Image (cartoon, rainbow, N blue to C red; front, side, top):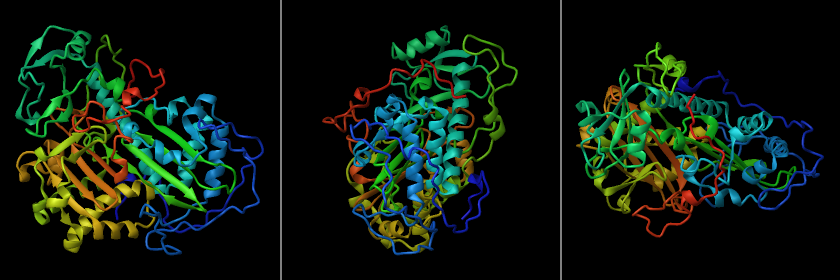
Length: 543
């Protein structure tokens, strides 16, 4: 398997013994109480630290154990070293940090897991601690715990995705600081014409940038800002599943609600941090990122849910001019260094390849599992399209019935998402579950052949769309590539990807934002009522 696009640091994939280290930090003083009122004493026990050999794919040193969830991580890290690092991390937190970032009860991890941090529907959640609020020492320890748990490959993917978020922030910065004109769509429902069909049906208005934003935000007018110079950007929102047309987004709101930077990445710790004292866990979450690790009895016993998104999959080749004049939103010195450096590059070539392979396989091998777009609902709360009814029971193709090549192509997409948390550790058990229990359905826009991204050129120059949805008895996997909820270049409308492996029980309003969703009229825990910090700034730049 090729990992060249994520090999930021060269690694040797050789099994190594991970030796426990006692850094002597946080082992004698008492830790403060977690927000749930329980206390970790920081006291050492006589129980020996568990150490083990990291186990790679097909090299497990003992049989996989199937837990209550039906999933298992095959492989070990020095969990007591990770616990020691987390103990030190918690000891550095302020009272505010403890309130948001530590729960002594390990059960709180599953109870409080919420998708709002992934799709940025809660910028300051009570149940996680933002990296921007941490001291340098705390942040370094959080990353160290992740690095000690993840394989080098997975940790590189985490860093690359954070870099990609910052590049997307540069694209958003250009869209919100360029000189331009206020435009108003003629469509009263604010539906965009397909980008590549030419300029939007719109009239020019006299308002400046801020007044134009008031038209969109306060008056609900179908206004948008059109840059004078290339690349001309537009913000697309949700998709109309009946027509396949995207709605017009609100670029003025984006710096506030979709800050494309690591200021809105989060970390949380759960469980006892006393040496050898039972289960503990940690979560790292943010825009297009969610990884969870549960430890018990010297092993990683669970590494799900896992969410991985990429945007843009392929970076637009045309970049903003370098000789910009100052205006009321920029002094003309904003640099677009990452965009310029990566212009035209496929940031995630492996993801591009597997998406194209999957789309061609869906069309050629399982066309009967196609479900028309109108039979789906677009759920921003999970960053996904979900079937209106359990369509997989009616038309879903059982993966146990397809030929080996078809299954391997579909499995490659699932494995790629899992790799974000698991790296090169084994996935044989999960592979067998999806093979034996999985049913696949999929959709696209327009007619099938013209809607699917079947070549790299489709991803570079067209607004193609694919959504592949697979359920087992207990699990959901989806991968979706489209242009929803993102700022894009009109000349190069690159697609972006969402993928997730999640227990079906988490696909509920207890773990995502459902208020005002007509498909969930009795939903509860709306994100706008979730406790937030009042601290995030009025304007957030991607750079």
